[in-house]
Amino acid sequence: MESTCTEILSQVTDRVLEITINRPQRKNALTMAMYSAMAELLNTAADSPEVRAVVITGSAGVFTSGNDLADFLGGSASGDESPVFQFMVALYNFPKPVVAAVNGPAVGIGTTMLLHCDMSFAGEDAMFQMPFVNLGLCPEYGSSYFLPRMAGHAKASELLLLGKKFGAQEAVQLGICNAAVSADEAITQARLAAEELASRAPAAVRLTKQLLRRATHAEGLQWMQEEGAQFQKRLNSEEFKEAATAFMEKRPADFSRFD
Ligand code: COA
Image 1 (cartoon, rainbow, N blue to C red):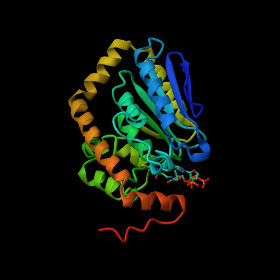
Image 2 (image 1 turned 180 degrees about the vertical axis):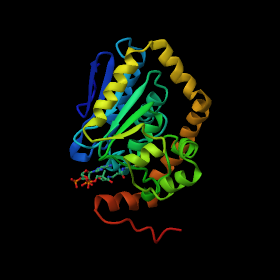
Image 3 (image 1 turned 90 degrees about the vertical axis):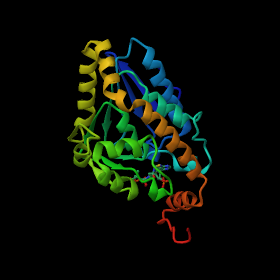
Image 4 (image 1 turned 30 degrees about the vertical axis):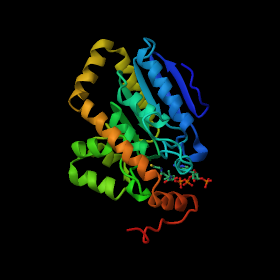
């Protein structure tokens, strides 16, 4: 199962597809080519009897710093046809179990994609953040739908309105991750869980995953599309331009001139 992009690595071992995000010089920031490659891998794996479970991980002590901000500033599409949305839907609808191993920063979609994985293991070095408002944006990938349901309204507000960073232990308390482990153990635990899942009766596993998600699946998808449309509008806002330019210029954003 070949990746179409050198910054996304893929390997199938014992019916487990491992997808590695590998762009360490940009803290694994995700480009359109990377989203396309991941979407294609997932869509192929969905129908392939060679794959019964998937592991998603990062490289070099980084999960992902989220969407490449230069891509966003350059006006890369994020509508329904965009590689971002194709990836989101491919993971959201993926019929087999997905296990994530998180080390280092997991920012933006780095955190929100975990809401759609079935299990995840966080190294003690993991750092989670959904800094959408800090960037003049709004929540994406169904996070404004799923997070309040998982973590309660107060906590979801704190994490989405203030964009606060949190660590592995808190990710476990919030129900985003299964376990906080040592940095080295995150990938080991994820692989073990995926191997175990791959050894179970495959139709029973797929049906159980489907049943676990059934109550929220259709509404969550519709919500994601509505969030996506708002997010796309925010990408053209002056607030986002100020925030992304400030990041590139390594200075704090100044929102004082906005109404
Ligand atoms: N898009 C584009 N470039 C990014 C990036 C992103 N999302 N995240 C990091 N980079 C770049 C940095 O600009 C820097 O480039 P430089 O070497 O040319 O200066 C390089 O990657 C290393 O990042 P740096 O910020 O120096 O690493 P750090 O270890 O101090 O911090 C993060 C890591 C992930 C906490 C920090 O880079 C960050 O907050 N990134 C932005 C996350 C974000 O807002 N994502 C979008 C969410 S919607």
